[in-house]
Amino acid sequence: MPKYNSLFASPESVQEKWEVIETEAKKLCALWELAYDEVSCTPKPNDVALGQLITDAQTFLRQKPRVFDAPNDRYTQVQVSITQDQWTRLVNTYAVVLLMKAIATGSEAQRKSLSTMWGGIKGKEKGNVEAARGTAKKFNDIYAPDEFWNYLQYLVGKTKNLSTQKPYVPEQKKLNLYLWSRA
Image (cartoon, rainbow, N blue to C red; front, side, top):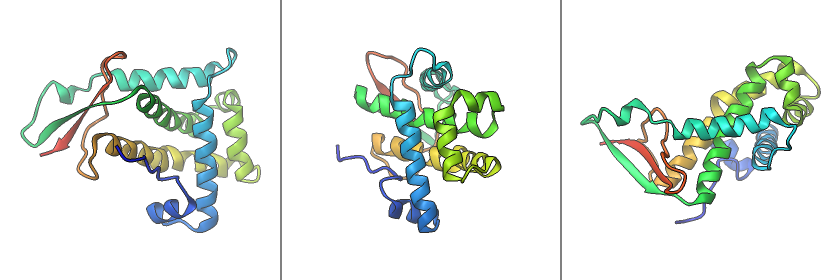
């Protein structure tokens, strides 16, 4: 399998994907790196909020969507075996979506419980709380989900026509990823 190319690989790739100016692209790359590093490290025992995000991401990926119970002629099932490292990256990438959602829509107390990321976003927005929440909202609505789907496409070897409510990895020991693809 070829090496994965993140949408956040460089400011140039960010500019190409989302048509943003260079300074915005650099900021988005830095925030992605900060967010991904935040969810990738082992949470400290007192970091309940971050640990919960990882648990929520794993739970989301293990839940079977109804679409798998009712096959449709317009879609075909895609199944691939993935490695433990790929599973971890998938979980972490989805955890970034949840992290940004918590920051964008959560209470001040929730943002404080995610202080490293919240502080990083506020720093990039020069302390402007509303701008920081707006950036987190864009990440939650656009950038992080796009990266998540980009990684899923990489895992299943498709570049378009992925269509599913969500991916599904039913077992921890045998890592099979299931998605639907347009027929």
